[in-house]
Image 1 (tube, rainbow, N blue to C red):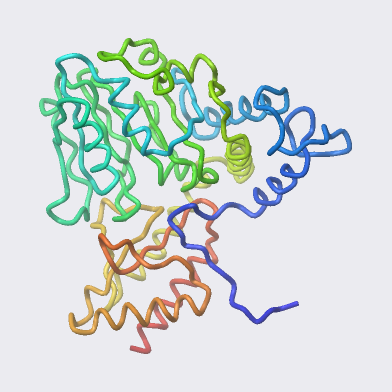
Image 2: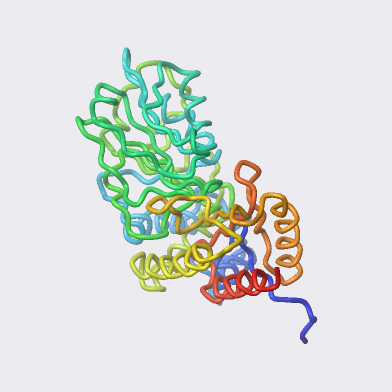
Amino acid sequence: MDSGKPKLWNFSAGPAILPPVVLERAAEAVHELRQDGHIRDAAGVGMSILEISHRSAPYEAITFGAEKLVHDVLGVPDTHQVLFLQGGASLQFVMVPMNLREADKFAAYVDTGVWASRAITESEGLGPTRVIGSSKATNYDRIPEFPAADSYAGASYLHITTNNTIYGTEYPEIPAAEGGVPLVIDFSSHAGSRPMALERAAIGYAGAQKNLGPSGVTLVYVRKDLIARKPAAPVPVYLRYATHAKEPSLYNTPNTFGVLVLKLVLEWMRDEGGIEAIGARNERKAQKLYDVLDNSKVFQPHAQQGSRSRMNVTWTCARAPEAQREAIAKKFLTEAQALGFDGLKGHRSVGGFRASIYNAFPEAGVAALCEFIREFERRL
């Protein structure tokens, strides 16, 4: 029966929208699993994913299957070990410098927003740290030019945040670090959104809740030669990449449900045509929305051309008369919410609006938002 309520379009930046088929299969798995780790059938083991041991055969089939899909679907090379950890990207802000810092060497960072800044702060608490690139002066509305090799020569590693959820900026391509300096990428909010040169990173990490699954799982991939490297200073056992590589993401009880959902999302991506097809669809969605905003007399994208995120589109009322901007923004959000456009309020660092259009967000929802923006502007 039609409730009369509008269809809800979920533009949340995270925890984010998941494919309906993944939600259905995850719900089934909460009820019961098969012995081989797949969704239940008549030969079920009689236990939920929420109940089974992480040392059991069904769960091993899930975690090792998910690991293989990370290689096959996302394109992480076999030279890197895949890990499913906890603590989000925030814990990686600490684990990276603890594991990669070398004696008498600095760590190099590019500052592109809040999460890059938090990573820098953690590094500064552990040793010499240099910020060798930043777009802070323009409120992070662009990706700064990639630093010259001499600015990070001799560094323990070079860290970048490849998509900046709050500001709606994104590296067009994963850059290559020179001189043998390991590149570290936080690719949390656009992991799996398009084909990427992930092999260029010595370490990559992503909170799953943006594009790959629910909150509580962190995808990490680490070049195997770095796992064997002895850290310059003692590192607690739990915070060593080597610990989790040796016990393939099973050193402590993992988020069993979260890893299952991540596996289901990767299977959905594979079945949708793979990362190439996903990337093409994401490009269409983003371009459609940016075209409307670029042609608006009221709204203006925050991110500059050449730095725009395909996942997080941010904009303000910057083209409206200054005295009217606050009222327009309030009216826009009120009407949008009433029509079922949820989660469009921008982060306080930028203000205005943000539409997160991750992999599972349908093209129909972007088309509906574009029409609403055009219609709203006509009525002003």
